[in-house]
Image 1 (cartoon, rainbow, N blue to C red):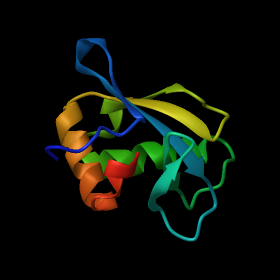
Image 2 (image 1 turned 90 degrees about the vertical axis):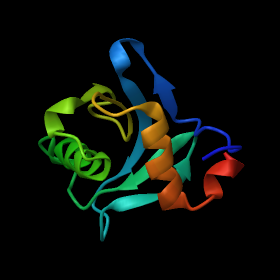
Image 3 (image 1 turned 180 degrees about the horizontal axis):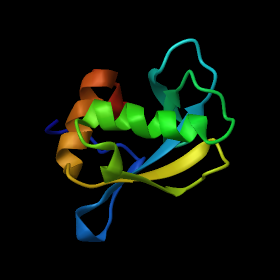
Length: 111
């Protein structure tokens, strides 16, 4: 993604962790990224926000999307909120940026 700006929701932390701010929309008709909301990636999830089901669904979705094991993703902040900070190990910031760029197909430049 040369020449494009970084997503505002991505941040690099110590020990090789990449953290992503995500705004979760539970009980959606289908799961997937739907855009940017308030500086966060907006992720629709079919699971309800009951008994931690939506959090588990978010982690499972991100693990599959970034091709990492679920135990490589941890919920750092926002357990009971729609706005969540998730930290991922085992994948670099550039690779995350590239995969997300494919989803948004150039719209990343606007943010």
